[in-house]
Amino acid sequence: MFTNRDEVLEKALRIFAKMNYEKASQMEIARTCGLSKAGLTYYFPFKQDLFTAVADRYIFDTQHTKNKFNFTADTLEEFIDQYVAGVENTMKRLMRLLDDENNSSGCSVNFYYYHLLMQVRMYYPNVEQKIAAIFNQNLRLWKSVIEKAKESGEIRQDVDVDEAASMFWQMFFGTSFEHSFFQGLDTKKLSDSLHFLYSLIKN
Image 1 (cartoon, helix red, strand yellow):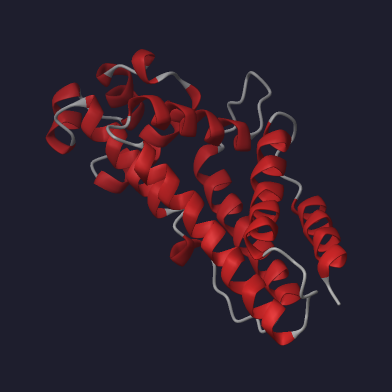
Image 2 (cartoon, rainbow, N blue to C red; image 1 turned 90 degrees about the vertical axis):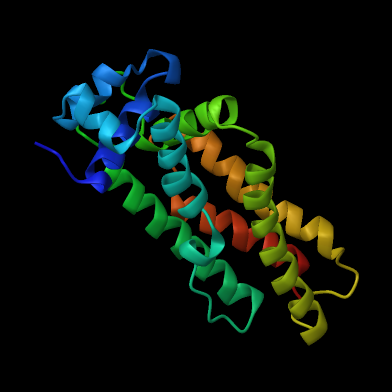
């Protein structure tokens, strides 16, 4: 029997990622967690409480840049490699949590995570600002390192920092979303694409 709050969150993560929020009943969640409904409500009195806790841990905490990346780069070129490494490590951690070897629809684990993100957008209270904060964190990261690269002469002086930061971020987010419909994010392809963008602006 699962009686640990963390284990309940892990089990619920899989349910919400693979089912619509409205279809995931407390009874179904409790059964999957090895609990009675009363046992589940001991930890989370309402389904919304559980869903919010799952989103907080596996979306907002996991995707926070301080939890996702460990940067020691001195150059934009090195930053790109460390960014991809952080993405890859986060993806592997989530795949271990989400992959229960019961992917009957043939979807990649990445797709289930995007499905969860869509559920969060619909059912997490006042979520728009929290999602915007995650996106803005990434944009600020790219902007900061691109500004330094411009100051150091690593990249051309005519580069628009805001536009370049947006292009690097959208390259990651767009590639990740596109690949989720197939076999999941190819980090080698992501790295190649980011380095290609870099080659267009470097000195």
